[in-house]
Image 1 (cartoon, each protein chain N blue to C red):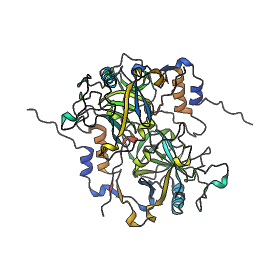
Image 2: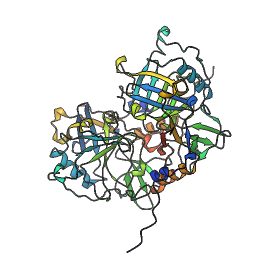
Image 3: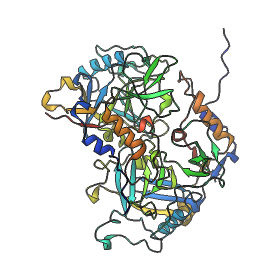
Image 4: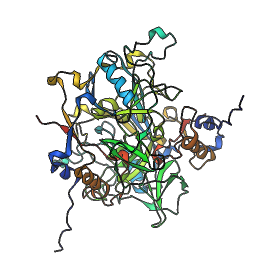
Length: 286
Length: 286
């Protein structure tokens, strides 16, 4: 009998064997809980890329801005969007007050690339010269301009804007629920990503075409509350760990997905797309 | 005052101005209607790429194989899957008969590229040497091997298989509902694509991780019927036209999305991904 070829471990086996140091616990000050009737969506904020937006979002959450508002848009293969459906009402008095949050912020489409550690993927990307991960966030980089920016992958959280580039204030937010709309990169400010609970957003019934805004208020999905984890009693928190994207485990698991996967595959892809790389998440052990 | 720069038409304006000859009416013999309680999903089959599977699917539809079965899997950011949940039951007697359809088919992962007209996109792709469209289907091609194959984009319809590459028979089908899993290309047989009604599949509640198979039969979404349009009385059909992907209108609309879009964008992407190119669909005029 012929010898069996050496078997490479699968991504799951690599994760199961990972050292504890390759995981990090989410910082409660950078974690948002979006509580819906169906459950909790956990979001990690990205102050390294959008410091002004994240500061405003912290204020809005602290003051309960989103509590009792809803998800008012669900466009198939694109985004869900939530906040105050009357924010742009003709009668400005109908719009909910932003409280002590700022009403105007600078656009935060990109940052200097020399700050954060960038774990580059070797894979070609059509949208940017270089792609990879920064602290768990899929990101891109251009050596020619010295800029880095977050990428619109599935689960990305962004701040809706109107015509002017600096018209977002972080109160109207969207989450990508479809094929990654990378054409939005550097055209709108990304502020974080969903790390758990995407299935609560992605399965929300779609609104009418072309934009997915619901016609009737009762079609909206109510938001019970959006709070910073740091402002929630510890007993009510959802403690999570995410795999460090600069770890050996992450690199090995990504390589397993890129080239080996399991025996079901008859042909290795030899490639992985930035937005096809999952971020492993697990419950934090107490 | 400075003159306004010349304004390029948007993708929508290009479509609105398109000549009738740039559209084709779906062939009823290659069109499947999947009727759910929530409405109708319209699928175009791809006999040019998977002739044996499509022939079997026609037989299964004609004999009502899927009628009364259900969607038994919904995995977030991946696929929904439907057919006979008991197809692989330990008690083989529980499996629904395939009637006069074949129980075994060859794998149809790729075909010779010299047959169909291939409208190539100029955009780089990490998964394949060349990508583009064949008769409305996103596809890839390798000049080195002379092969062409369908690509796993959002809305792609594939035939589930087990371990052996040739273990699909077209009775268990899946539709991509998440970020394009292109690693599946040439590892499983694609048989068509959804052209209308994706929002009825994409918003189906997700089953439990990791695979999304429901635990209880009552969680499944019932299938009223799957029929060939050609076997449905004309008064009950959904007559659709799709834009010819080898037309000037399609090329111009794609270029508008790649580089110009509308004035909201401050930075053109200069790129479009194969799976980000929408297929324009409209009602056929009588």
